[in-house]
Image (cartoon, rainbow, N blue to C red; front, side, top):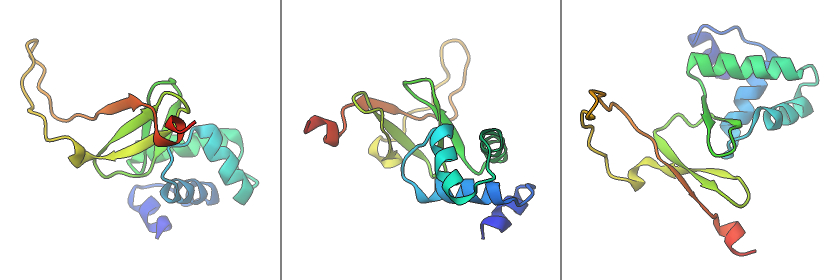
Length: 134
């Protein structure tokens, strides 16, 4: 199944690509490249740091994953391509998905300078329940 998704996007099927995509699809977290590399290296010992970065780049460029940069200026990766927002915990740095329906559809006005809004995402910042308890 993952092989077919890669081929549909014009990507060659490699053990590293399958392992990275499989890991990202299985986690609700938004891992950094380092975290992806650590997880994938437990499964595919031939996945070098450079190959993990290259795989992440190719998956992002092909539209199979999203790359987000929130708060800490570190790229994080997300295989959930359904429309959604994010919550960033200022205490622990965790990034969590927030259902898109949480916010009503915002109007898409033409901004004063002529920009037309076509889409939007919201990043909420605060403290997650785990950090509130500590």
